[in-house]
Image 1 (tube, rainbow, N blue to C red):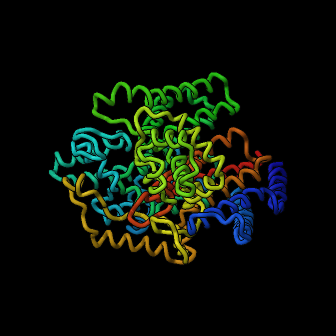
Image 2 (cartoon, rainbow, N blue to C red; image 1 turned 120 degrees about the horizontal axis):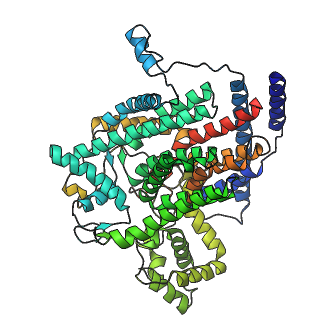
Amino acid sequence: MKREGQSFCLKSAVDDSERRFAGWIFPVFLGFLFACGTNAASMASIPFNKLSFYEQWALFSALFCVTFRYGFVLLQKISVEATGEKEENKDESVGKSSKGFVKHFVGWFSFEHQKSWKSKMRDGMRIFMLWLPYILLLYPGIMYWDTGDQVAQFFGISVFGQKPGQIWDHHPFFDTYLYGAFLWLSHAVTGSYIIGIFLHALVQSALTGLVIACWLSYLKERGLQRVPLKVCTMFLCFFPVFPIMFASMSKDITHVVFFLAWSLMFMRLVDSRLEKFKDPRFLIGFFILSLCAAMSKKIGLYIIALSLLLLIVGKFKARLKAIAIGVTIILYLIVNVALPNCYYKQAHIVPGSAQAALAMPIELLGRAAHAYPDDVSNKEKDSVDSYLIYTWGQVSEQYNPYIADPVTGYKLREGASTSDFLKTWLKIGLRHPMTYVNGFFCLESGWITFTGTSELKQPQKPYKHYPVQMDVMTTTSVNPDTFGKLAPSTIETESQGLVKNIIDVLRSVPVLNLLMYIALWASVVPAFLAYVLWRRRRTSVTLNGLLQFVPYYLSVILLFVYPVSLEISGGHGNPTRYMFHTLLFAPMMIGMVLSLIRRENQCE
């Protein structure tokens, strides 16, 4: 009977894979985005009135239609073949009885993917050991320019125009305290701040290795079979971008560690139909991780809050949904009410401005001011001048199509009316809708293009095209007027140069360099997974199952609120660290989709 049920299920899967045009809306829409992004990233405008644009749209759509279809067939084939495999239950002590040093060494690096914490700790240590050569080559680690300014504040140096001893929460004070603690401890023990950077790289990499080991164990629990699980493990262990990024001291990287751990707890929570909320230990751990993920990066709070609120639509008990809402409310009150009103003043923390959340609207307004400087009423001009630190005329001059910071000025005027500004913004947008459309795609084009400009200016003919790939930092770069006073930025060492050469090879070798394209992870993979989930919606995908993908997709969608998306000359923005979480989550999400398809094929 089991064999008959299995063959029927496999047949239905094959029948579904033969529906060639199912889900066509996903690759076609992605093709439209890429046609817009490619033109915006190269010319700073989209030629909607030219035939060439629609030709590009058709070509991109055809490319993604073919890629998605055969990618779907490949995933289906992997899951079907995996269903027929006989699962081998390996002892957790695998490799310990092997004779000979080489066999013992190789056996030690055989991942276990077991449920026990001892097994997860060993797997986490294996990941860390495979990353360790890169961490040592990058000694003492990598500190970003912004991070150097953050920790300088921790040690009482005036930064961002603040008084000495003040900490500006534009970069979360949580991260400032965390990095400052490592550097303070290092200086107190060794007399050097540099060793603190290295200590942070070691601790961050080790903790991330453990979290990834827990994720891999979870995927195996869900039924992901041996071959895809091994491929996932090898990619996480050997793709050099991972150890390099986790050797970096940056709020974006710190946040992704907490967010990765929180997402795993969210998966288990949904698996239990929210019943895990009844376990006090789980609830406390979940809330602490939620708090850390929310405080380590401003946008983290909104991803977590929206994910928890969307649990309302799931098929769960009402009282458990109420707990999810309660956790969201308490989290919001702590981060956005209690801390700013009760702690900031005592700790000499200066609240960050709301301009970061409005970077996109302000940038679009800047494009309208640049294109139509005289098409504004006195009332609208006054509304803008009273809200932004720049006047309407200055906004026009400051506008740059690929970065919003020059227009926002990093802050807003005190006491300004956000509602009045947004009304003005909407009125101007209704007069010039295509200006806003062009402005949006220019600013966020880096996520939806394979080629674009690398210059921080308005492109001029002849337009130059550069591959939009991950540009991973391998050397510390700090402001000599801030953290540089405590520990000068070091010149690239020979070993750091070796790591940089490895990245350069990955960026240049045909086929292999596909892995380095930002858009692959920021838009193509998410769109492909949505395509697969859509095609399995009547068989293996349930509403509760879809909710497990919510944190991932929210984090992808919110990429489009960032003030920069292209890697442009001068080191501005560094979008690689903004989209890094999409690269890290990709193998986990592919594993989730494969486990769903396999459950369907088993027909249990």
